[in-house]
Image 1 (cartoon, rainbow, N blue to C red):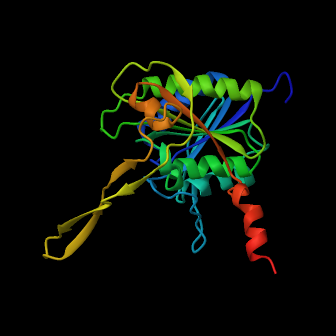
Image 2 (image 1 turned 45 degrees about the horizontal axis):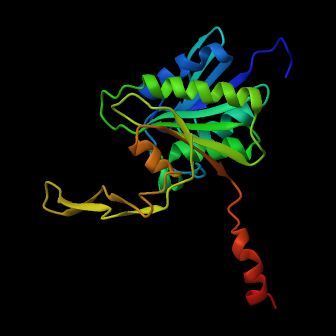
Image 3 (image 1 turned 45 degrees about the vertical axis):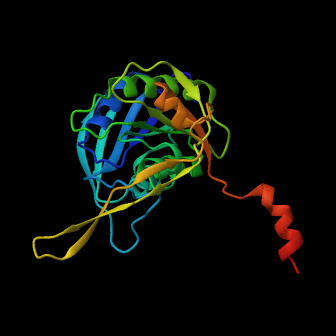
Length: 257
């Protein structure tokens, strides 16, 4: 990167371009470089790494200011990253930040999250990438601390970089003064009782996604859920290579002909 060239930062989310989280994130990291935000035109939560393949995408300019350009996109969070890298930006971004998500993306939520899907896509593209989430679904959620910690991690990544194939998942607890930042592992757990049965106005049964998270290691002080439950921001390194290396050699012995 040229000494005189500002870092180029690509920002996206899965809550939509009008969400409070992405707009507070933009303001927080704006002093760090040139910002280009490309985000869905409405909420796309739970999209994981979904892409749009059956109809064309539309990209609309929302605003353009000095060192800030904002677009809305009719696609998914991953679509936004792909469009940014392939069609919009004149060079590869120095950093990608997804968020600030409205709700936790700790533990197994990384599998379902559109925020983390976009973060992983940035990683696939060779961009140092961070997903940022606030563990608060309330309409009046305060994103101040999440934006502050997002900037702290962003500055560190801009300075030090990340290993190839590794990205970061940052979650910030809600409703309390954050005690500090802990580097954690992803908590082992799963979702149970995932649907609430209801009736529509015609008396037909519908299924509303809800659920309870079952923490299989509540006493693991190195896990992200433990950190969040004790008032710490949790930072987890994720990798895009999903190969189960510990089982690989055993499989070769058992499966190969």
